[in-house]
Amino acid sequence: AQSVAQPEDQVNVAEGNPLTVKCTYSVSGNPYLFWYVQYPNRGLQFLLKYITGDNLVKGSYGFEAEFNKSQTSFHLKKPSALVSDSALYFCAVRWGRTNAGKSTFGDGTTLTVKP
Amino acid sequence: NAGVTQTPKFQVLKTGQSMTLQCAQDMNHNSMYWYRQDPGMGLRLIYYSASEGTTDKGEVPNGYNVSRLNKREFSLRLESAAPSQTSVYFCASNQAASYNEQFFGPGTRLTVL
Image (tube, rainbow over all chains, first blue to last red; front, side, top):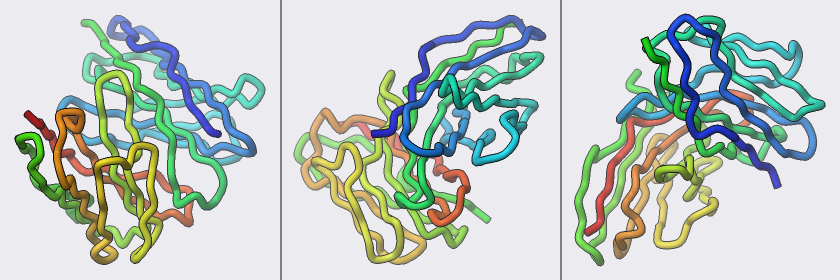
């Protein structure tokens, strides 16, 4: 069965510092990996995804993520954090071309960026 | 485009009452999903519909039923609400045949007393 883990419930960084939100996965075959962000009282918004090709993917709002097959990880990164990046972040994994597009979501990581 | 819309935004029920959560998307997506979000538990899939006319159970289907009314609309029904169903409910959609992301609605915050 596929699964995804976000080992940190909370990440705190100072504004202007780099940030990393971690995600590891377990899935047979080739995974499709996604990051979503959720602001308070809102639905999830897509940030970026890895399907195939270059292991470093770039997404919205200056975020990027690196797919590491040997470590089964897909960590979200940003070189310089903003206070407005404070939100709840979800990693999700999908596998295969079918399965009705279902994704398995991690439990989420709350990112707090302090001025 | 409105994207994915959900009604109502908030609802308070008493134990045993029934209600239907409505979801509609205007992106011509084949697949639609219902999730619940509880603190510290991420998103859990309740039911999904791969295409019009089909529905399947997800991870936590007990106590819920769904109807894929047409390609646009996917409703979630609680027949006899229980306090354990207090949660935030999200509807989402995507094109299942592609590798595209899911699009989420704004959510329904449900409290069962």
